[in-house]
Amino acid sequence: MSRKYLNGRYCVRCNRCGPTPYLRDNVAILTKGFSRYPYDGAAVVDIGCGNGRNSRFMAEVPGVKFMAALDMAGDYGTKTVLGVGKMPVPDGSADIVLCNYLLMFLSPKERNQALCEIERIAKPGCRIVVELYPAKDSYAKTEADMLRMQKDIFRKLGWGKIRYSKGRFIAQKGLLV
Image 1 (cartoon, rainbow, N blue to C red):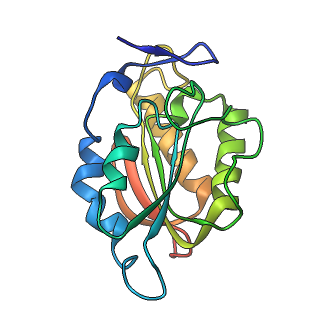
Image 2 (image 1 turned 135 degrees about the vertical axis):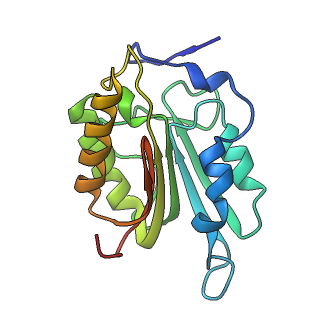
């Protein structure tokens, strides 16, 4: 069963229950150092949270202080139309941003707006995980489209690379690119 988003696009992965394997396998990299002073836990923002599977997973991780889950459908987390305005998250408040299987469903204009918002909400040293896949009803219809989009997103963020592979990456704000 797919969930229909407000922009008429679908995510076939939203009916899954557990966290994405990439997130699960790399959670230690994302949370490293956030349980020590001066942090009282990493503030996590899940953008395009879908059914909340990654949000629920991160909320159980030691060293995490969950902050916000945002989605266009609004059946989990805060209903937010992504890519058109401000996200309901304070400036410079996120230590970790989850952006799993979302950006390929946003138009180039919406994607640029979302990336600007990610930059606004990210603290120095913030880490982001981005996952993409090609889908016929997305703006990355083929694997080649997805790879071009991934390179463009990474370049526009300008954050330093921690992990980078086909369709996914982890980056950190303030690291040299």
